[in-house]
Image (cartoon, rainbow, N blue to C red; front, side, top):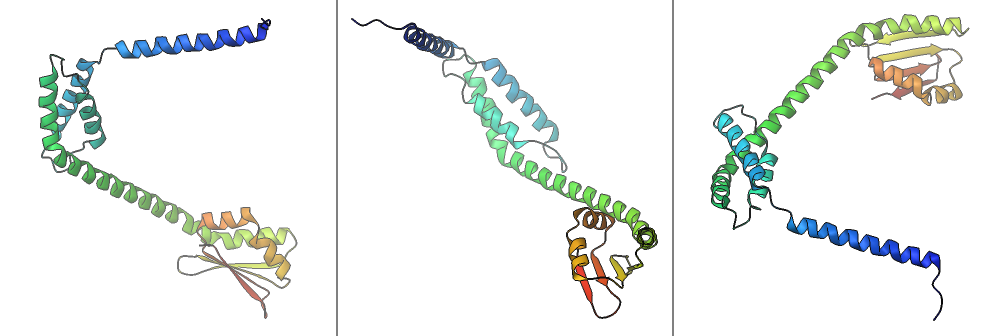
Length: 212
């Protein structure tokens, strides 16, 4: 009979350990008692919450909490002394489920509308702050270009100051290409709320960048 290497013995021992551990775990799970008290407590807490908001126009209730409560109530073992109590609560909740779902859906729509209103208010606030900044940008940018030795005329156009015009006698396709691929500059213009940039040499060549 051939000899068995130490490595082989270690491997077999490891496999046996895993099998023993798995069997022990399965045995624990098999004999674990279902927590009826916890299931009933969860369902009763939800039922109390539902009773408090039932019939209210702007009531808030979570349908997924109902589904969780029903799932655990249904798992109460038939032989459990409190099975009848669990079934009674489940029956009441299932009878009210359409109303619960309706209130939940209405709440979701209401929350979405409130969130949309908050976002619009925030956007309006940003716009109120950005409008003066856009109007002042022409003067600031023009000074910046002059400091760089570039004779660029910068104007802001439109009632809401959404259009930025840069007039530079040396404006060319390579310069326009460079500006249109300058991510930081484009992002700054967008952040300020500019929607269009017009680049021109003041004569025959004009280019437009759409920032929307």
